[in-house]
Length: 321
Ligand code: 8YV
Image 1 (cartoon, helix red, strand yellow):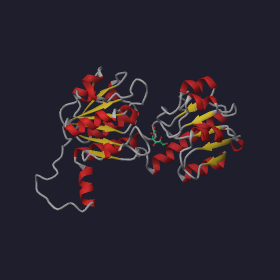
Image 2 (tube, helix red, strand yellow):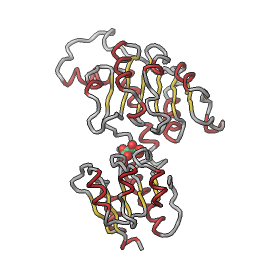
Image 3 (cartoon, rainbow, N blue to C red):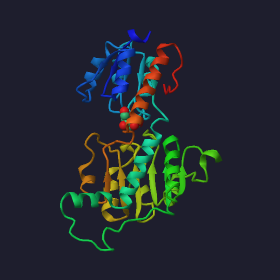
Image 4 (tube, protein in one colour):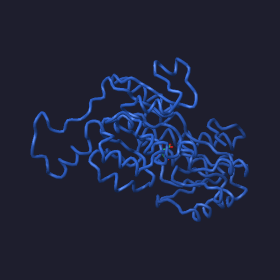
């Protein structure tokens, strides 16, 4: 069955994943590994039964309307699906899947790296040595914030949020969270639930974002919400750039209202935000939360498992539309 199906793979995946895609499908790979324009995406989807995209390909209502009837599945290589108009896909009868669970550990690691990089002035120290400007040392030099015993606030206590909470507990932090629904005690593991987002903000020495980007969460971090954080708090974002009003964040970082931020995601990707990059108290990474060999393999295999299920007439494990 699989061998006859045509599959468009939009970005370069790990060798093992590409090999399996080529073994089981008539796979069209994007060896140039650049993001297709919407027109190119539509054009390349014309002769395939399925597409395996990343979060970088935007399946808007217009793109979905222009997809051919033979295209049955959008099997995302991502847990986030904010780049796909799910209602439009449902309407057109296209199945959409994602890759939950397998990237939670890797993303939690990056969240902790962002927190520590921000708290301990990682960007500033790194730059100082690289630029040959480390010409002084004293016990009062480069003093940062210790996270031990501090409150680790989580917005969005889903899979990634829960693993990150566990890692934060390893640093002796007290976990607080806000979520649409309160978790059962075995998942909460002593974390303090705040029904109101505002109350989470008031109780977060570090605030880490782990919710999806949606119309409800876009710009959740803005001038008003930043003002509710304790003086000298740290913001960590490994979820989506859309959650943050970057101008408001820059103002809070410049004024010292926030001690620092650790960011793996930006409103503009690739590229980031040059105004944020100019600040010493921002630790930056280029959207690499899930970028480990193990996790990238697992994500690709999970996407292919979902595709295989659809073409075998089974319900895919990770169907989101
Ligand atoms: C990936 C992500 O970098 O899964 C997501 O939602 O943002 C990241 O894990 C990317 O989508 C990989 O394809």
